Image (tube, rainbow, N blue to C red; front, side, top):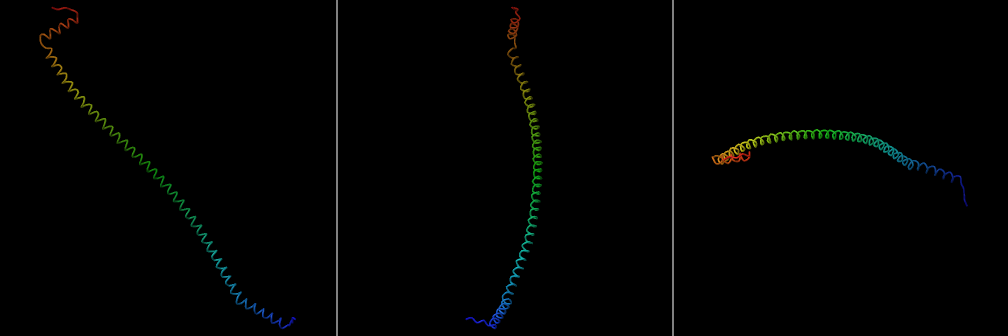
Length: 163
């Protein structure tokens, strides 16, 4: 059967206590130190992550601010370019209108000069034609016989007779 001896129980308890102390000192203490180090490392990493997150948020806000400024500047540049384009367009139109007006004036002057030249030529031709016609009339209708025919035609028109 089972013998329960006081000394057996005492040595068993002492063995358990010694085992517990050895385990606590050689196993639990290093294990707890490792866990504390890991806990500290995790907390440090979390703190780093939080600070990095804050830095990222700050950089994001800075980027968004820069982006808004760039968009505003792009809008101003675009407006300035539009104004300059309108100004240049109006300048080109004015210049084209001025050039067209000058060309019209030149064309009017040329037409006037051509008209005067043509009129002078026509006057000269008319004078020559009148002179030629007068000369021809004088050659054809000069003489006694032509005078007699004209006089007879005149009298015929008036209704009188002549011998």
